[in-house]
Image (cartoon, rainbow, N blue to C red; front, top):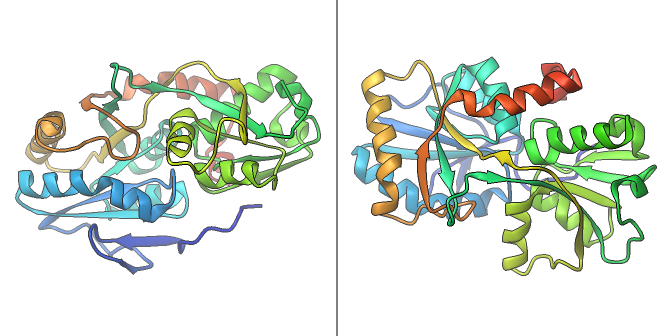
Length: 294
């Protein structure tokens, strides 16, 4: 079961304008760059957060830059598979899928102030919850984000399996897919669920914005460090164009606010091998691509 979302299945969003359509164009623009954003938070807020970067890229690359969002992770993957996106900002898990299904290739990753490109998966409970450890949630109603999410899907699956010997569907009484990190945390705040999983950096962003507090959404478990969310291009982009795009991202912090969705300070080069830990988790859990996309 998924919690309702306000957006349509796949939304075409032109930065600086309103949502224009509910489907991707039939092909990536030959005279412009198309960028996809996975639904980490509210789609309209993600678009607004990426606007300074979009303007910079448009000026630097001297071509139009269009940004798209979707209501789930697989919508962005499918759009890249069909060459309707040139670049996408994936989570590590959705990148794993995009690499396999859409020939995506990671090329940069955002580095946060302090020099870290890593983050964590967390599990939170409501303020009035008696749960203090994961084992207290046996039989509970719990919200994960999306099967293709890393911190809201793969890693909490991994933590539950490691701690209890059971998959979440077996350990919890009911598992809900919230569709986005903010929807999962708001479900905790509103006592719609007994617990939720998600990314610590989005949790922190919601606390700063006053959407939740550390009391309304109490953290009871934190994962080890995870590789950050990469930007990836489709591998059949022109080689020269890839180099120009790479240089633009690496130099972006000198010209614009790159903080965007996750308060990053600058971009650095990423490679596919940075995500071997994600591949190892998938193998240990014996997850098929179909199970991840369910």
